Length: 632
Ligand code: ADP
View 1: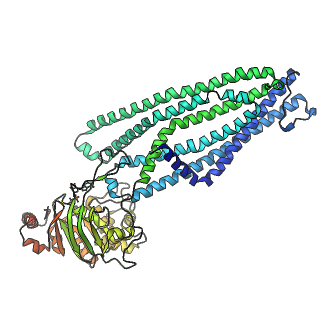
View 2: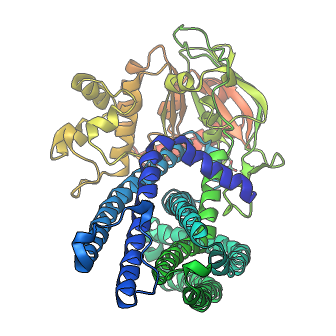
View 3: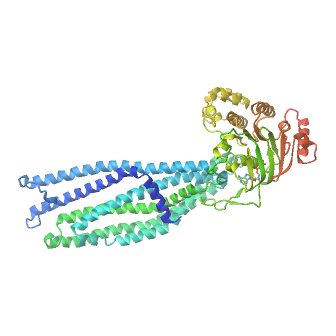
């Protein structure tokens, strides 16, 4: 992303919150004006003293002719000046406090805006995007990079504005006092600007690499936590540690490299500030010797210049810090914006064509659907990398079938044959590259996305529950559901025992204080969650894989009751389930190889009958414990 574009977008973000920035701007001017008045007061005091010691020296040049009355005498006037300086500095301190708060309010407003937009974007990005990006990287982006943007807004948008205002106000004052001396003091500014420019160019790639390495470290940590069981079970702690060690060392070396770059640059700019003071003493001293009458300046003015330059040096230092953190912040900002720019491949159409207001019936048709997962790009570390489709290895090939509303369809096939993929196309988790999925006669792509997803209740293979109460988990898609409905859904999913055993019943928070559920218990709660929604289309992707056969058949009976009149897709392995289905779709290598009722398929030679016969024989061997797979 070109620097210009990046800066424009950051400025756009700040501009959107300009109202919040207004107090900040006013206070900035206020602080600078107070500082200026304070230095002027000090200069007057110096001239006042000098005039007393040497009556030939120029008298203080009272601003706007407001001089202390003669009656006050020397000490009276000096005391008045001292008190004035004191009040001004107290005023400046108060204004600085208010400014700090106002600045933070502005910065936080921008950051919150950005964070909410990122969150919203993540909620809407396609599953494909998540398939091709690391969670660690994404989390880093949301925490680290938003923080970097915060630094940038604070640094560049706020502090550079402060620096600029200071520069303008102080320089205007200095020029109006003595143009020649002002120009002399600016002699080293081109050197500083040049150094900043070179630094920016050199360090930006270094910072980009740094954040890539940080991403990798975060990913390491994340996998060490998520995969802790596997790592320990296979005794891989040492190896993981040495990999982590190596990655850490790379990150460390990169940081040291950045410090070296900064180390060359920062002393140079600091030296520029000291050289400027030398110029001031040399040239300024000569001007004081000449005196104001001869085109020179008063000693007090030299003092004021010294004060202002010191203050300006502070501002220059601030700008340096901004520049120093600039590339890092810009790198972070660039990644945030790239994520925000990520196209929404799956979104609601501009003019949805779904049957207006009519209840969803649940007829599903696949028309010559071919779908391939995007190839995971090699440099998925780069947020902007777009996954490319790899149609040479499709997960589904030319799949066509039609399911009437209310039918129950079982999908069977060996692992990797495309069952989950097929189910995921119904509610547009992915879009097929070829062909279309049609719901109630309307292409799924023409449906309003939310309406479509509300019409489909999914139970996934991996039972994910939020760390929330059982009630809230089950009522996830129906937040206002009453206890009675929640309990009925739980009963239908044969999960009442889970609630009964939980210490606080429906109000038990899952995952808290040792309340951990088994895979089967979790699965039954996710089934209850889908049942409570009472969707026209229910999709059960191996939803009963980790419950025992007895519970499964109980759930199946409840499903028959609950789901009468609803279209149901079910990936299951047990014959009892397959027998109940109106039709069975047999998949192999992403193609439909057979379709028919259980009885029809049993009467035809093929994969289905072979697999079913194996299971039947297993059932004979182990009565009551049928764990065999019918078609896998
Ligand atoms: P099944 O549910 O029958 O086990 P899947 O639908 O999960 O099969 O997978 C079908 C094919 O698609 C497999 O070759 C699998 O490797 C591939 N696949 C599944 N999910 C993804 C994914 N998120 N990204 C890339 N390939 C995938």
